[in-house]
Amino acid sequence: MASSNLQIETVVSFPFEENTYIAYLVDRSDCIVFDPGLEPQKIVELLDQKGLSPAALLCTHGHSDHIGGNRRLKERWPESPLVIGADDEEKLTNTVLNLSAPFGIEITSPPADKLVREGDNYEAAGIVLEVLEAPGHSRGHVVFVCRQTSPLHVFGGDVLFQGSIGRTDFPDGDFEQLRSHIHRKLFTLPDDTIVLPGHGPRTTIGQEKRGNPFVGAPAGYKP
Image (cartoon, rainbow, N blue to C red; front, side, top):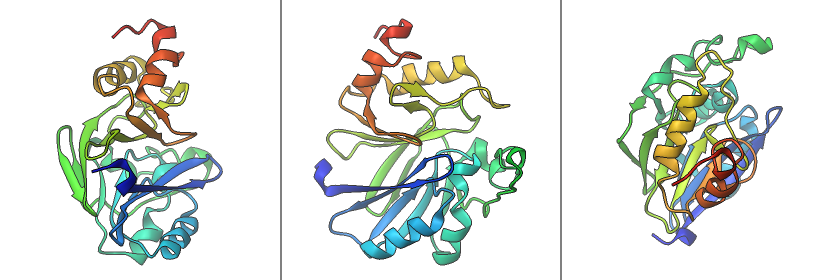
């Protein structure tokens, strides 16, 4: 599949400027929604504007800013399966684990319809995604790799950012674990692979290998 056939829209939700991605093929009216954020009405409005309906709701991890829109979207499209990494399932309904309770707002999600693990392939809306487990920011964090496109696309959540990485100071965070998974699973992808992060602008694997001060060459990374 040429990358031009894969269309990706971005909805930014405040207050954490979290990126929700809507991915769809040009000849289809169904789509995948990645990480429904805290302003779900924005997502619904864009889907209606584009004439799209979600074939699946995929969560890279269970922190509240990435699951805050799940309930609203499931209410509108109840047939759309909610998918998350198996080790982050509990965060969907536990306000302490999903970090909403510490902010004084209790956010919960409907339960998962499907759990995924390392090596699974998940297909919806004509898009095939490989699941890679990448804990360190969150214990059950997964990333979704689309190998159909050229270049590849990674829906990466809060693992690797442009010039940064996901926080590791949460209760189940671990910097060494995160760095190891970035090196072994992301930095082994082609340099032109496009990374769509949970916050901030998109980047590429090559750019982060060369310049990321936390896990790239400036931090001692050598291929």
